[in-house]
Amino acid sequence: MKSIKTFVAVAALSVMSFGAFAQSVTATASTLDGAEAQIAAQAKQAGASYHITEANVNNGVHMTAELTK
Image (cartoon, rainbow, N blue to C red; front, side):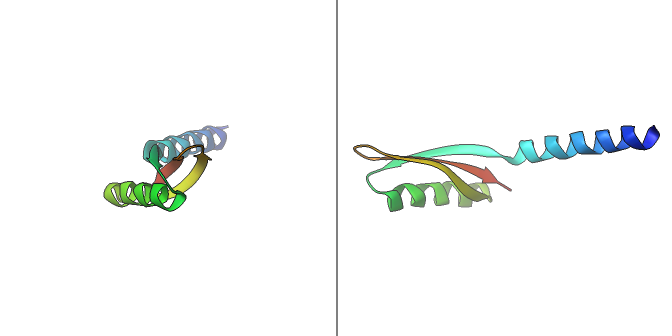
């Protein structure tokens, strides 16, 4: 029983620490390359890596990404 409680506590802390370092950012530009460059600059400034989660092209580009450390 004690090992189950320990496992649950460790799992909960792992999820909390991952969530503490994830951040969503957005950028708008006239091209996909321009929007990605803005995302990359934001990630570099935060000292994080990025993963693009959404890009919408409609009279310009709107891009969303998740930064993770």
